[in-house]
Image (cartoon, rainbow, N blue to C red):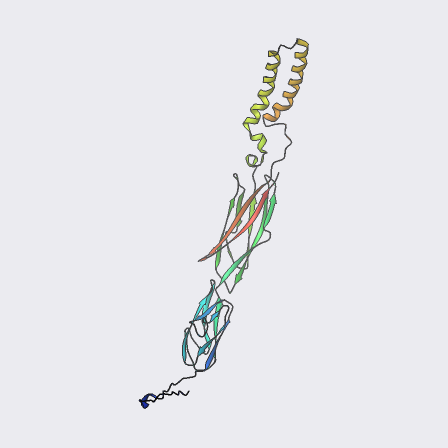
Length: 275
């Protein structure tokens, strides 16, 4: 760069300047994951937002940058160590070249619960059963305590599991029994005291009105006969008898819980109790 002027330069000592620039190479750090488990590998920011594997499994850093990597296992997994440019349980790298690392995550021992069906139907007073199998994950070997619970409109069916303790690779039998639950299943119209009161009292009130109107005896006898026939058909229903209405099916949820140490799993079986 040159500078010229028309005036006389009285100070020749400031006629030049020097600036030095250092050019650094860019290095790429690549991460991978291995093992039966899962997790995330992260770093501090480089030329971007940092490595997050997860989603971004590579990042660029300036030559000579010192990078520390972190491995975070997901629930039901454990971190088993580094390989590649890092080994052991920790990873700190100096980026003097392109480098690759691998984080190994292993699954923790666990189990799954598998019902034969998620929906059961049974009649009042009946019972049904189905097997629930337990499958080991990642070498699970513990015993599993199994319980059940029913929720829904009172009265609820009863449930039981047999045996109450099981090992993975075996199964239990869930049994659901529905006693006679007429209080929960009868149609609402037969439960209404107001309906019964009206069915009994309305005919008598009509008879009283007829006498009050002063009808002649012949017509009054005819009206009374009709009203008596009407009462004969209404009163049994008002008392809760003589009805052919079917009970309304009710739905319930049976929750089956398996516990082994700190591991807890639940499944839900839907139960419908019909007529």
